[in-house]
Length: 429
Image (tube, one colour):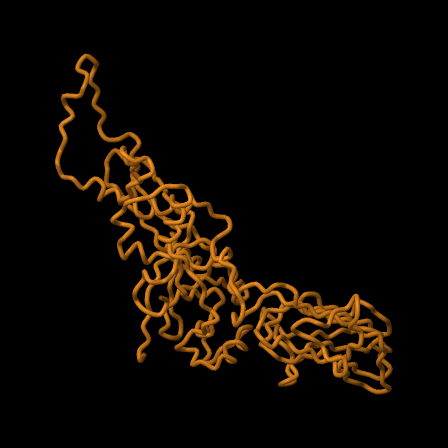
């Protein structure tokens, strides 16, 4: 049901793409760059035109959620509006992390207690020989104890946290160690998740330091089945490494091959059933009316449809003429202006729109033009919406990532949003 334009034939959810990470085609270069370049290039798609399936997530039909809520509490409803195409296309986009969390059991923790030194300046691929308890080398990604090379999991790409600890000693005031994490395939220093090179220059001098070169939980993207090593360089002879520890822990899987999605993560955890119903009431000005004949039946229609009869009812005979009559010119509670708005989702596009227009995307400012109205009333949903945008290609897509002050793209949870799913046709097919 995700691949054609019939919106009712998917079983409660539909697969759609929301860009929560900053896809390659939002950048200005002609090829994917940045921390996700490896996965984009590895997919071998013409990425300017296509979206990898790994980025699609289940979007739950709003109507499906409404049906489940009513059924759970023993109610039913009748609503012409809820059967309309406009309403049936509404979805709650996948609310969880941009990529599915892994089980967390893929951890490699190894060490070496073998000293290494040479008479002249040297480079050394650190070889880790300690792998038994309390160390671990049995996960999907493992270190070769003969070469010191770590090979990432073969079934998926992922975000890993890498920690390196070294006990080192210099020989003079000018002694310097260079510690780096290197991609074996191209001998290049690894770029971490924030776009910085995973390398450090340590002026150790004529002393021993068990803290030197200590990297803690550096986030690194690793494609599947890719090899890495810890490279230690000494700029003069006599410098010594006494021990080293390496810990690599999987944080997130970036591919969904043979991986299940827990549908509980598709829904925002901080949202109640009543929040969804209340937001729908605000968005479409819905009127809920309980049947006088069946308390379990609720009629639901937009206000203007519910009160669609043009017949005027004369209530003048219902007044109590024994009481003093008072006439109020206009409604004293009426506001001069109403502002209807979605919650600010906090993504880069929302900030940009707010800075330009001083109001959020999708906001409606309605001036009543009533002489007696005073002040403003703001009606805001708890849900945000999804802002579509195109960048250097013609791909128009909802973008929910943020951009940090230094220009680095920051992936985000999509969170609680309501959007309209739309079929996208490729041309040529």
